Image (cartoon, rainbow, N blue to C red; front, side, top):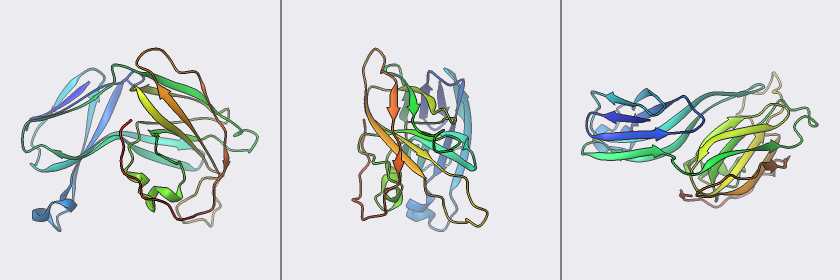
Length: 230
């Protein structure tokens, strides 16, 4: 599946567990001096699996491009996740950016202890091996800049399966939230967290993962992380 933008920028994707993908293209006006004070411009592009679409009338400049997974929901919590995010994509000249996974495999497994804790399910994210999964590190430690390669949810049984993941080493993290109180207005912190490292081979499958959950650690100073590739 690929998106072709008329200025020469190509996005292509082949994913094993999806009938189609949405892409989010945002002009990075906040990092372009000549565009200071101008609101960013975002376009959502739908592309069917293994197909190509042409996007016309793109404003020249640098773009933030991501595969958008919308309406992930567990209990009271809802998320939209920007996956395979690429910063500073320049479409003022001919360039090619591919979202292609011809090798690797999907990841499946179980998040443990949700039913026993009375929780409705969990969010599961496939992230770089340097990810800690600690929500306090997401902003203070710069983990928001680390790529998310896929995002799925579970029910109370904790079962999950991702799209195909390219060969490499990853951290699979899980977040579970207790129901919100009516008086809560701040951004929620997970009730339980879990993570497991996994190596995706060039060929073959990965044994089902078992993610054990623990209470969220107390907030503490975190080291700023740099984006890494698997």
